[in-house]
Length: 333
Image (cartoon, rainbow, N blue to C red; front, side, top):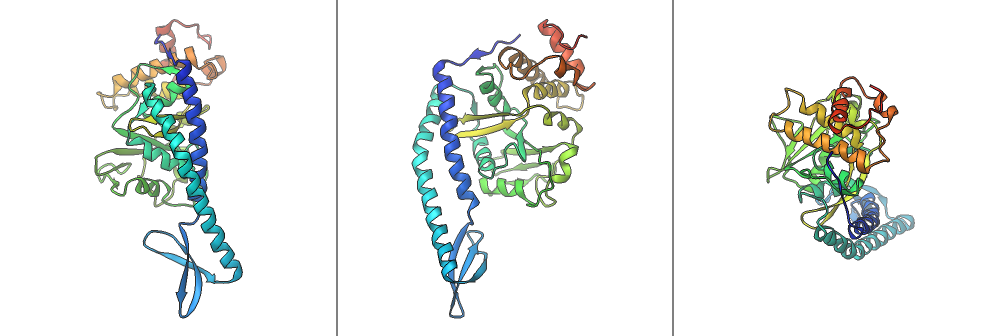
């Protein structure tokens, strides 16, 4: 069984502090993002109107002629916006200090490219409600959940997200608008339309379970192919952690239940259609993550109830792990 190298007391304290500071900062960022892009006065035909501006190009719509009520709305908006910007500026130094200490203490790191995407997802309140991190980038969150390092690669040169919204999406380009806000050079791969790629060749893939495919906006991009095996990653209880990136910035990850993620990895490693270069890594990750759950995540139980709930496709991989680790069989096989 792979051993989890428990974080030191100093590392654990830093993780708590980083999360607290990040949550305070992102709450202010969400409040700012919830405001209109801008409210402006415009004079048309000698009359003054209040306009809701949508973007940098100045596009918008009239909210009607200026009245005392509209004037109060205008002043309140700009006062609130200025106060939020001041609050965010005041919070950034403490957050940056905690993120720098995170890196100095050699805690699990994400790539610098993943951070802006995750922060924009969180700013738009998408993590856990609309999107999950389902690729290797999730490993960093699992390490923090286990309060220790798992000897596995914890980042890749691409980024996998799963669409998980349960209700039909009114905003038809939620994912695409998020990606373009991060980097305007993102384009959809013409040969693989479930994948977006920016000018630096950083790739973002969007995945979806068949049960959630219909909730994605009709004009959203990338366009994922519904995969039945993605249903397994909707089960259980997600992991929610704040991690550090290589550039010294923080980001939040919401990832699938580690038990189901691990079994999904073992299943993928056995699929002939899977890239043969990725299958060994899938197997290593799946086995090591189950080890970590058994050793350091007692709140993710591997008891008889969990084992009895395993679908036929995954049960053999759990049995294989039990045989390799020589743990008692929870399900009584």
